[in-house]
Image 1: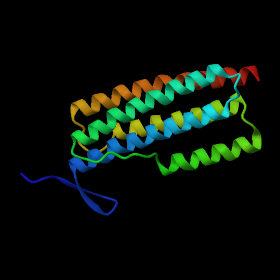
Image 2: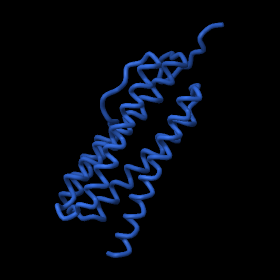
Image 3: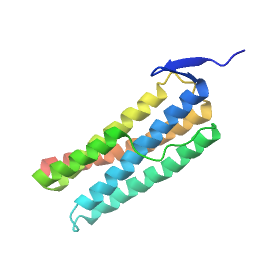
Length: 167
């Protein structure tokens, strides 16, 4: 029985390569999350220690997820990526530009963080809907990480909504 191959972006890939690409995309989105929260930590005022603590917690959460996912890529025989997505890099540049123009208030920062959390949720949804074969242990890992990130997403969304009502 031969190795099933799929054509993606003009190149033939076997199922393991396809799976490695799916997992590496989750590594990238978690790097986006780490870098996004590090940017948010720099942007909040020193008096906003509550936000700094939350942002540090979520950045550390994604650092741990990156390590887990990179180990999964290695176990699949692949080379894990070590950087974020281009989309994430562009978003952080836009966040910095926007902060320069409009200021770095809690509401704006929480809006930006919630946008990043939405992107992470989309990436995990796409990973679970991939055409690549997801072994049970990888599928469970992705589902568990998605739940963890969803809790962070909901927390950021709720803080953003509370700030909107207070303003």
